Image 1 (cartoon, helix red, strand yellow):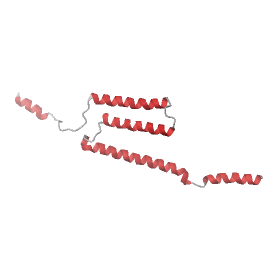
Image 2 (image 1 turned 90 degrees about the vertical axis):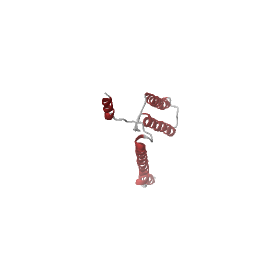
Image 3 (image 1 turned 135 degrees about the vertical axis):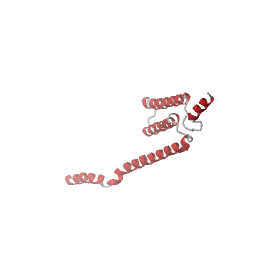
Image 4 (image 1 turned 30 degrees about the vertical axis):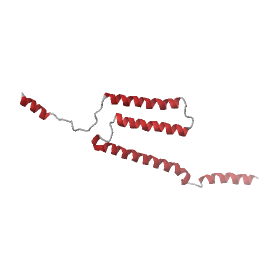
Length: 137
């Protein structure tokens, strides 16, 4: 029997050295409550028309969205500096920086494209109207 017990422990994989995500129900509940709060507050801000200025509203709602993404990453995806030797967090930070640069670059190009693509386009539309008025007088 002693050899049978020893053989059983030899076949069992011990994961005591694992640094993987070990979650508890408490962490999931905290994440869920934070997610509900971070959804309810922006919903109320929009529905009650609390913020009148559109730019301020976009910045505030964007801030809530970023915080909610972070809550999901920490409480549901279990991303921190310890998991997989920090590579998960490092790759996530790289992805976030890459996406931010791509979005900022796209917005910059689209914003300046109208102004810089054909700068004399607006003048051509106004000149015929001015010439037409000059000929009729």
